[in-house]
Image 1 (tube, rainbow, N blue to C red):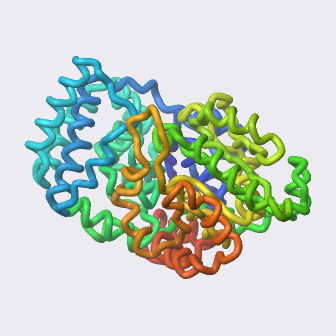
Image 2: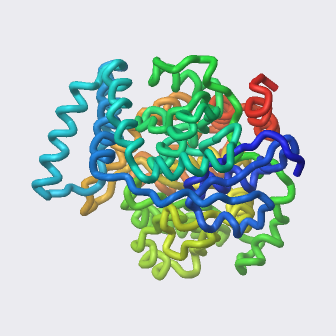
Length: 464
């Protein structure tokens, strides 16, 4: 690799590592790319790049307190600006905590957040937040590392990682150019735009509009439309296996057709095991005349619901679980491991060699659309011990666009699982226009040129 611009790639999640390691983003001869990260497993990718370990993270209670105020203030501001209370659903978890001290703290945070829920108020909150950040040993150690290595650019790969605030702030304080990638198309309405940068990279013009709408103090010229590297491998033939070769690895019959059920984390969809059980019953009904279908189950790699075990035991001849192949984390902890190249191969081929993807509101439906496959969204409630309802999930702001273009088949009633799944299998063309519109709106085409667009902005600051 030739010496060029010294780029510090700030990586703080397994998904970010996958996006920027396995997409070909590192294949850049005009830059020296150094990983600045707390993710120990990155070395297991066998990359040639230098890795600088981030200092020990030591944020305190005061920072956490201000951060929560900032988050709520942004969402309260959005409620008033867009006259839409659905923004508040981003604040609701699945369980109630009856701890009196915690409840009083939440009340205080809410009161203060409402006071600062204006554009000026949100901007003002940065002052005490960054003042407190600069006093931490973490910030000071990050600054020392930057002075030692002298990068010309610090590129943060995820805008919501709280441990990324101090490194990016230290870079800005030293006059180093900072860039932040907006990790996902659905992140912007959620608030917590913690990372402040000189420039932001977004997936599409749709996301740029979302950024300017939700953060009116940003300059349009500071938001660059690049696309996302996470979909680049989907168009790389090296990741795609022949059907027989892929299925034989897991003793899956090539004569069968497969429906993929992708699991969510327990907070997003705690009743996923029940939904999988309902799908099993529907598939058995599909197979009543001719035994054609099997289910492939892919759990969430960082938060697998133990309730799935009972369903897997009940339908051993119908379901095959293909566990994500992450290194560094047998327990799927968020910051203790990341997806390997073999897991990306697994993901791509699991979707590509399935007829249909079924889940509760997962962006996996977009992955499926990119690989030419239809999806079903589960949209009904079942009896539950959780403070949770599927209706709340689909009232998240980022689903508004999906509801307009209908890129998925909707399973709105429990008794309709069989009929909708059957329709999706027999008539996938019904959602084709919606899927194509979703891809066109959310991503920048051609996807294969994503890394080229990113590097043009990083190195030359201009359009492709």
